[in-house]
Length: 436
Image 1 (cartoon, rainbow, N blue to C red):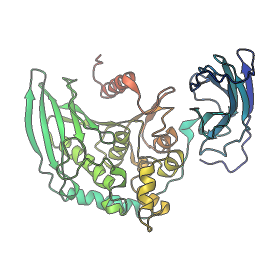
Image 2: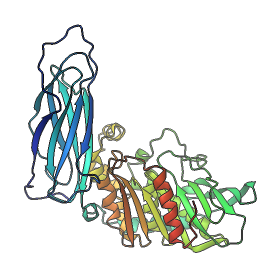
Image 3: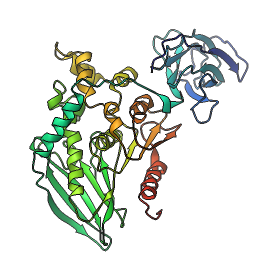
């Protein structure tokens, strides 16, 4: 994804005063209040043509009772090209005054870029206000090199064989019954003999029924949703989540560093295989339409959805929202997590190289070309937890039919409209009548 040529960027700093600039002597008796800083762009959808100039406006309101002065800094953060540099801009804003500062940039290549604005007041060493916004160009063309190790396929072949050798010991306990559906708590044995559970909602109507397997975000407890009377919903909790904590505790919530020294004992090896065991359970039921099985999750659950659809051809539909567990190399370039930094520095034999090698076995980017079923991905353009660059690194590798929905102003959460959109997509894909 990195450009090897010098990018041709158009960068221009412009300053527009909404009110005449007044430079006044400080009012020692005034009250100092942090300035208000907001960003906006002149392109409504945030996805722009490559090479097309975009203007980002920073609006600063001096809310204090004294004049405000200092420097405004613009920074570009990206892994798609060499970030441009710009000189700081000096400013002076009278009390109660509003001013707008503009930054213009053109993305030279496909990918995403965060534009950050920092307001540094005179005499201060750190910013008193900072905001960032993200723009992108041709995300469906992002192409990140795979990081598969030479034994990647053998590793997953052996892992699937180990899971198959463990008797699932499915147990079903009825919880509730009403005129529309029955609710069961389901228990099963997964990889390593770990007990995992989920909540099964079955319509009180003749089957077979389509199924949606719901998988959790990081630390999320999946619970029944009591929504449909014409499809089975299995809200499943892999190890360490929800009602699956008998053998693997949920606290501390540090799944991504558990067992990270060894790929064979890494948390996500077991968690991915737990999701496949959930598919085993669903596929064992006579009331399931075996040609209409969907998996859906958000954040970590989006990564689980990608992994499950990659490793199990029985999945007929995959919905992955704001997916985590994608493109680890760029993930750690775009985000900062002290927990991971602390884990690596805790032992001298741990390095970023060895850590990324272990993580590569569980990177959904390296698995995604196995996905054959239709896939829908939801993405928040402003997501700072799971940057879209990493999500598209996996999504663009999917072999089957695929589509994505980008939400320009959303971050790590897509809202109720998207939730309804996915349910509608699942029903339409399974040729079910629409429901509100």
